[in-house]
Image (cartoon, rainbow, N blue to C red; front, top):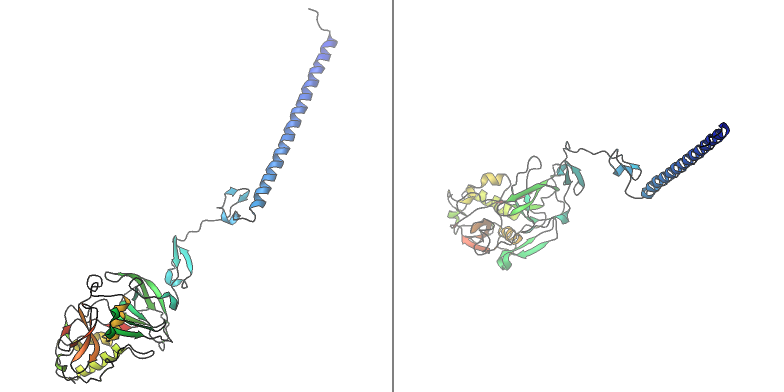
Length: 354
């Protein structure tokens, strides 16, 4: 085999070197072009992601801090509300707040009149105290803030009532909830502490329990001796008119004064007027016959449900007198108002306003 001369070897080396240089230039050029195109594409994608979301809900304040989505880096920091102390009573009525991982609807401030609709399925309880823990004193059965309401308990003409529409009322707020074994679960209403005492009471309240477990005379010795005009009980409706003192309270005060002075005969230890005087001093009274009727009608109490559902006794004395020998009674056993002689013994339950 013929050997290459030195000149031929040099030419061959130069040719190989040129090919290597050309290949290097081509490869480098392709890398530069590809990198440039990739950078352009990335910039376009970042731009499109940012501008496309600028008018949507995908903004930095909605993304957790340190997380990047579509070219947007979040700024949202998780808020720890576990140390919040605000309660519904600290937040304006009807306003919504969030604390301790819970949704809170405010109850501070007066309750709008239209928010109160009393019925057997919409129960409200009364806490007569404006401060402190919930302490339920009774169930609300009449609201003077609405339109005038007339009715008859179970359609009985002798059990009629007219709840007046009152003005200049005190203000109240929702204090919480309470569940009674007979009336069920309902909201608890309390007066606002800064109430103007010149304002009128808005609600009628019935105690949740009898004065005791026994039955009592109305006024045993008064049989045949009563002054028939001592109260307004002979009218079809003896619910107090707007602005007037509740009829039951007026009747109760009059009869306690008469019993204390033995005006209608000797006192009997089982007469109810001698047993309720401490409670009456605190503002409670024996309901009038129309106040009892309004209570029975508000909750749809009948001779079928008065005991099992509402835990009521068969008969309760009212403070409404009828003639010289009789007084009216709320007879839940028959479902309307009747009269008994004042020597009969019936259960006693008190009411109040606030």
